[in-house]
Image (cartoon, rainbow, N blue to C red):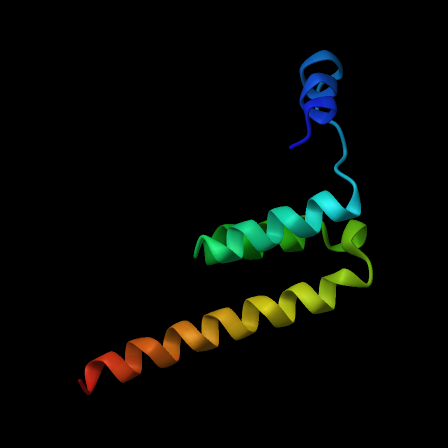
Length: 77
């Protein structure tokens, strides 16, 4: 979060994140492997994400598919 957003959050309460911040947060959650939280976050902000929603859900699907493939591959090694 940017310093301005943090200050606004502390002063005014919850502040809406802009699209770039939403996309970055979703990417961070996916990158950390926090799939369930990422799915929840993406669904909660579906309308705000707009055109980015489909790109992020595709990225999430690729991540979960790759993770499943790695788990299956690990069974045979």
